Amino acid sequence: MPLLEMRNIVKEFPGVRALDGVSFTLEAGEFHSLVGENGAGKSTLMKVLSGVYPAGTFDGEILVNGSQKNFSGIRDSENAGIAIIFQELSLVKELTVGENIFLGREPSRFGVINWSELYHRASKLLQDLHLPIDPRTPVGNLGIGQQQLVEIAKALSQDARILVLDEPTAALTESEVETLFNILKKLKSRGVGMIYISHKLDEVFAISDRITVLRDGQTVVTHAASETTKDSVIAAMVGREVGDIFPEVTHEHGDIALSVKNLNVYSPDAPEKKLVDDVSFEVRRGEVLGIAGLMGAGRSELLTAIFGAWPGKFSREIEVDEKPVAVNSPSDAIANGIGFVTEDRKRYGLILEQTILDNMTLAALRAISGRIVTNRTREAIAAESQITNLRVKASSPLMVANTLSGGNQQKVVLGKWLLTNPRVLFLDEPTRGIDVGAKQEIYAEINKLAKDGLAIVMVSSELPEVLGLSDRVIVLQEGRVTGEFTRDEATAEKVMAAATGHK
Image 1 (tube, rainbow, N blue to C red):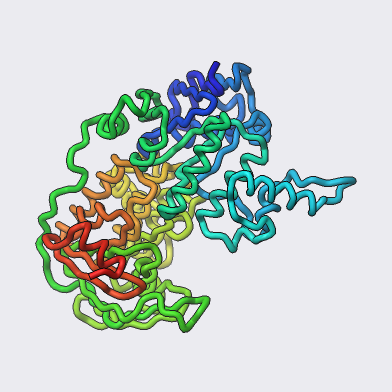
Image 2: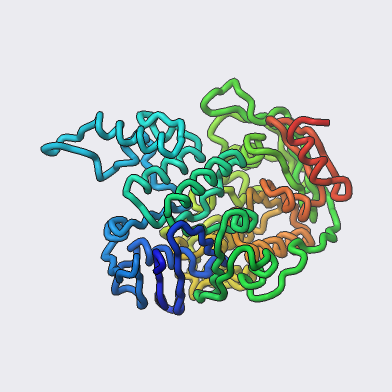
């Protein structure tokens, strides 16, 4: 008998059938990966399982250990032994590790919290997972990797037998990923069944027993990981064979679009500490300039300071189209033809509670709609054109942004900046958390924009992405430029050597 069965799940939203008869099973002690393009229905299926979408709002059955469940909310799902760790962590950073683990379930007597018991239980749980974390430490003092592990400890404190992990390694270092996987293997040996959602197929194949592919809200195929290949999984995800993922680069470079000289960026917390140290570069029309480097090298800080959005001290000289400009704020940058697709789309790129239309036209509202009275018709036409051009999967421009998949949210952010008609476009991790099919679409759009003469500066942690898209690559290490390569010169070995400070 399977630990979990989801039978013929159907979930509809106005104008959209998000899940169309999806079935999924999980065995005790099994690692079962759920993969698919953004918008395939993975997150919706997990929200059904977690009680976010309660019984009565969808059709189909959920069985745990053969017993049918009708969850009226999240607590019912938790009581059935199901815990979900979403990509956006749900920890309260002002509280301690122990307080977070038992939040809402604190041991108490006569209404008074027993703090010594709480921290004793938390310490025992952390020791059991071999996590060297003091339960009295504020969560905000921990790194992202340790916060992810605290989320797992919190889930296990609820005696979870089914653990769902949604993109758990998106913000982790390699060593943190290794620690996470070691813990998950221990949980597997104890009989915990795990559902793993990730776009990183290397990880999926490294750790999975079975892999299920969703596409357009339907179950396409389920295979034992040992009996399929990455190419087959990708083909099932996108509904077609996938060839070379990167477009052929044939860009003609024009005049210098952006010149940055003597850029220095300082930490807002330690004003004497330089995060970017005397960096100068230029990018031409029709050129894709890749910025490579390890985490903490200063890549995002570089773009943010040029855009005038860095919260600490910075200094630099900027020329746009070979004319000096003053950029002291994002509005100055926009006025001078610079657009910025930020790394964190949900925090800095979108107003999640607003519609696609409102988000897309926000940065170019005056140009599109007038300075005094908004013209909703012109706004709608502009938004519709970007939805069509970028192939955003949405039934209407009036759909709210937080109802879209991650890939479609990223397209909305890109469309917002394209409506400003930028001369220079900054792209910071443009495909983070995006599936293979959506990545190809973003790559094709970047290539098209460069062919049309737009100057692009792109930061990416994925080295194949930097090498596959860039005409030229600048490498940062501890805030300094340690290498510069043309497309023909750049290799993974050379870039990584420069990024780690080796000649």
